[in-house]
Structure formats: structure tokens, C-alpha cells
Amino acid sequence: MDKIIEIKVLPKSSKNSVVFDAEKNIYNIKITEVPEKGKANKKVIELLSKYLHTPKTSITIIRGKTSKNKVVKITSFT
Image (cartoon, rainbow, N blue to C red; front, side, top):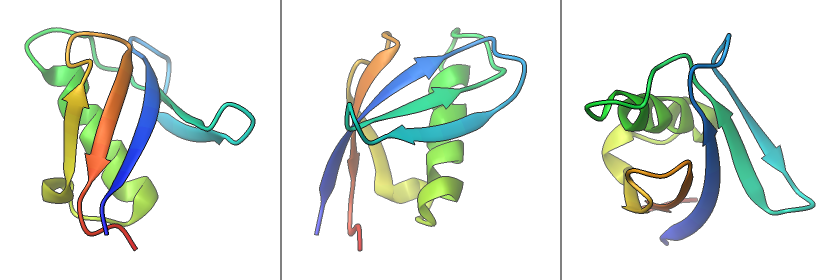
């Protein structure tokens, strides 16, 4: 079953972290990477993969590739 989630990315943070805000139903992801040449998106996928215990290949950014607010599709989410 696929799952669609919303995330908000905070680049150039002091540390990497993923926190789910249940009230807003959004994942807040802090990353140390700068948002250039896809580095930030790559780090977002890496962190989500670890946080959700799913392969990186199952995670796709479907909206907001150049924005802090993104929509992500997770394939075969259980």
C-alpha cells in the first residue's frame, strides 16, 4: 500500500532530525545540507528512509522538489 505524506524541510540546521507533528499531520525534517544541486532532497530521502524503516528506493518526492514544503510518496508502506 502506498502512502502520501507532507514534510517541511529546514535546511542548514545544526543537526539532522525527523519529528512528526501529529497536530498538523506533517513531518518536520531538519538537515545540515544546503539546498543546492539536490543535496537537500537526497538527505531528506535518506533520513525518511531511516526514520520509517523503508528502503530509499521506495521514497519519491512528488511535489515541492525546490521548496521547503514537499509531498512524498512512499511505495509499499506497511
